[in-house]
Length: 69
Image (cartoon, rainbow, N blue to C red; front, side, top):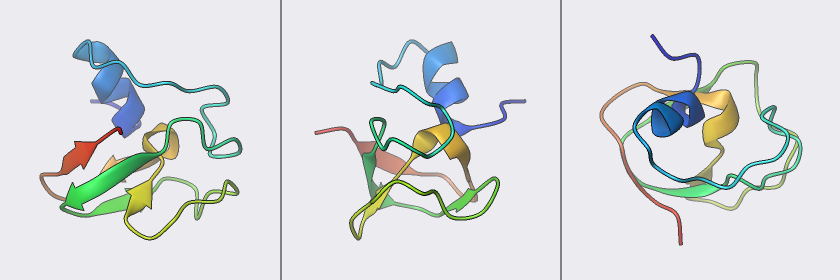
């Protein structure tokens, strides 16, 4: 089982830029097109816009569709 969405992406050779892995920097931000996520340790400190999420500190609550552009 994966601890975060980022770990799942890495295990499946999906390239995502990241730095801190803790929700501080926001470098891994992705667009959540469909589905639900939850943050592992509460809301991240990095700024994220509506429709974005941080895979480094989240897990999916359902099937998700994301974009990284």
